[in-house]
Amino acid sequence: MTTIKNTTGTKAVNILNDGSGLFRAMYVQIYNGEEQVLASKTYKTEKAAIKWANSKLS
Image 1 (cartoon, helix red, strand yellow):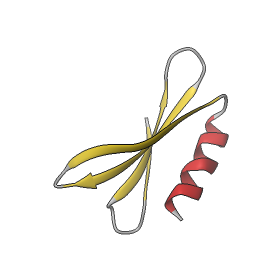
Image 2 (spheres, one colour):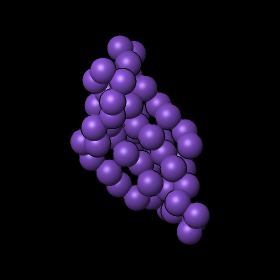
Image 3 (cartoon, rainbow, N blue to C red):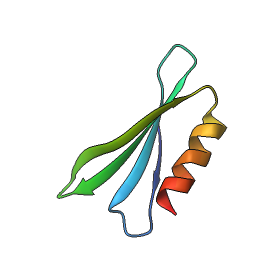
Image 4 (cartoon, helix red, strand yellow):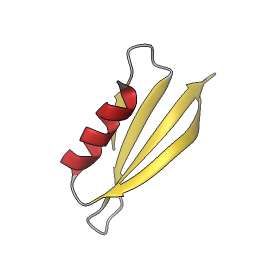
């Protein structure tokens, strides 16, 4: 699992390889150590998922 966080640590994107060759990117809000999923997308490549993650966190 790859995790990309914003500078304050309040939002992050977790990227998981789901075993079927697809990458699931989940945009989450972090509050009191708990994560709440705000959006989720599936991509064929990890590079595409990372690009989406960077656009969400900027």
